Image: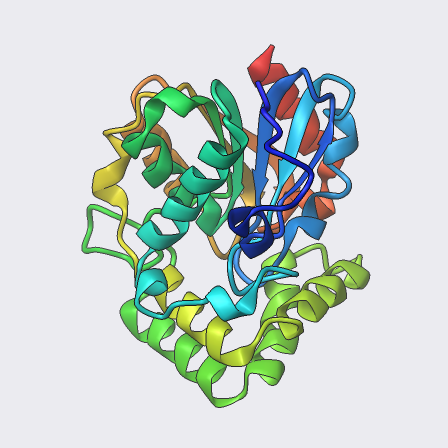
Amino acid sequence: MLQERGSTPSGVRLRNNVHVTGNASGRPLIFAHGFGCSQEMWREVVPAFAAEYCIVLFDHVGAGDSDLTQYDYGKYDSLHGYADDVLEVMAELDLHDAVYVGHSVSSMIGVLAATRDPARFGALALVCPSPRYINDGVDYVGGFDQSEIDGLLDALDANYLGWSAAIAPVMMGNADRPELGQELSTSFCKTDPDIASHFAHVTFLSDNRHDLSRVSTPTLILQSAHDVIAPLPVGEYVHRQIPGSSFVVMPISGHCPNLSAPTLLATEIRAFLA
């Protein structure tokens, strides 16, 4: 149940640009965006849930319309800093039995938050998750060799705007719909380059594989059939490691189904919650 705490936004709400909409008496449903994005990326998914659920949208610090003055390079030097923020937002709104939908890196942020305070979470929906992007011997296929990640980060640091324009269409897939890649590139370009670089290093160099087995919350893993950022073996690995999880491979391409296939994504989440 959502508990409003006065009409004046708190520091937490301002920090993370928190917006609450939908059915105020409904079950809480939190949407968390991925790298270089903002809560705006959920605009085509939210309407499918607004009549029934209390929708909570927010921006990670450093993204969207969050309070950039609150960006602390020490705090956000690992995904745990972002998980702290998620739990603070949930505490501020007094959320319990919440459904958390995390896209890309926010999937692992949700995993960290849910393992730290499982009583607040009723379900997790992890959209295109990856606990580690780098291949690790023969036992783990993350999709990239260390040298490829190093090259990606070097290119980002050297020319963030150029990197954004080049990588966004690759991440998005759906070459027949170039406007989607352009939207993602535009979103990347709205992020401060220094913050984007720091978040990218944290994202692409993190290893959260050991956290997956600690998840006790009912979990849905939603995987794109063709995703160059989090390929199919990654989704299968996450499914194997999270006890009792459900795994759905969507017949789509790209890493951002919240933009490219919002209706299908919403349908799968609703089916899981039902």
